[in-house]
Length: 426
Image (cartoon, rainbow, N blue to C red; front, top):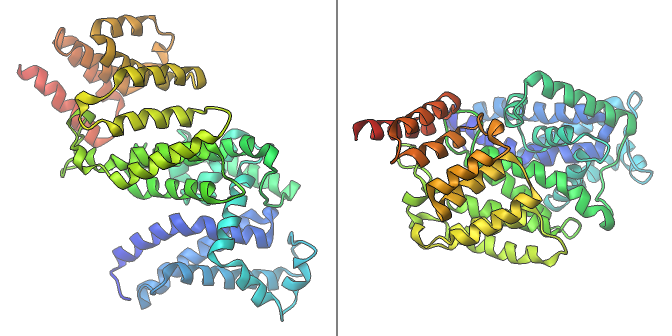
């Protein structure tokens, strides 16, 4: 199949998001975690080969299978070249089969089927989030190795520098070189604890798609879809099913269902109260409801349970006026007990305003211990601007200007500028 170079680059980027984690997980199974860098190099070489080959010959009918085959062949080359120089971490059962020229090919073929690859990817998720790794390193490794983020994208998603990301990755690779940890599913008794950082990384990936920290796009649907895909794998695999995972999946599906209504044809922001709810993806909402019901099977309530319940309240309202703000505020009161972060408290203030009005909300804000942290968040200044919009127009403009000094996203900057113009034209 022939395609323009631009289409090839776009397709390769999509495949890299979806397939690089799978390929790396199989390669780590073959080489061992001590050789994580080698596995990453093979994945990168495979992608570069695809770019070069497909530009000349066109995109194959099954590009994912092409990538898997190319990675398999490169892995065989590495095994043959490194047989007497590298200590690969094979099991006692695998070692003779992978060292024999007669059995290496068939054994390698068995690794590259979809079900085996999915299990390997899930095992690799837990390796990335090993308990002896710092939380920041766990998330960094997940985003970089399994989710297809570049160093720059990882740095922006984690609000740090590329140098810091490179240092974290270097220390993590050293940890695996020294400890030679074999990918495996955690025992049932430790599954919930070990799944928490995995879900945190997946949800961070989703947020990078839903509200990107960089670039001109208001959303990156490809990244959102990748996060939903990874979480779906956790939920459908018998080794990793957890109530928290079902709740996180429901939360992402509820948000994704409303994604298309967040912007108009020009890419400008549409607020929740102005969105065309007929465009909401009802299939995703139904799937979210199903997963929210499945999440009720545990003994604890996580932040994902509560946030999914909040998102569901928005999804079930047929129009903005029907939103059950009292119920949402009660859920936020629960959420601040589970996750008492500055952003959760700020979001609660926006809901509190819907229930109690501007004056009481302003009084609550003045009593908050989070004001210093909120000062760096443009949403805080937008909330203050909305509170003062009718009663103190100049104060509202000042608040919007402070928000404008912080926000970088073009669509959100246009929205704030238009709101300021609305006040000035009154």
